[in-house]
Image (cartoon, rainbow, N blue to C red; front, side):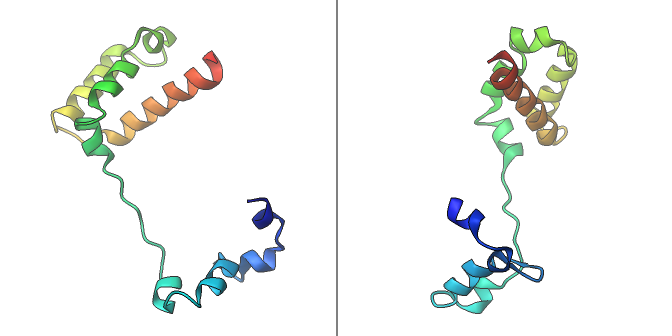
Amino acid sequence: MEFCVALPDGYRMKGIQGKYLLKKVMEKYLPPEIIYRKKKGFPVPIAKWFRMNLQEKTREILLDSRTKGRQYFKTSYIKAVLEKHAAGQEDLSRRILTLLILELWHRKYIDG
């Protein structure tokens, strides 16, 4: 990482093309259609995760007494969001993820 940060900009970018040096090195190993293709998204199935694997843990964290005690959001609102999402009435995964990240951030950086 330190090596990469220390490189002059001309090695990291050429015009608007990022990762210039990496792409030049990889030309020996990969075809150009792989190296120079457009960026692709990486979809993550968070909606499914919050309905299945992470549903219980998410409820546990967002409805915990510490979370409720902060009074950032009404408990009834959080319950409604979780229930609507779990029932498949609405995809509220982004909202749930935001609430979860805020709470976990608060626990780590504020609570200590």
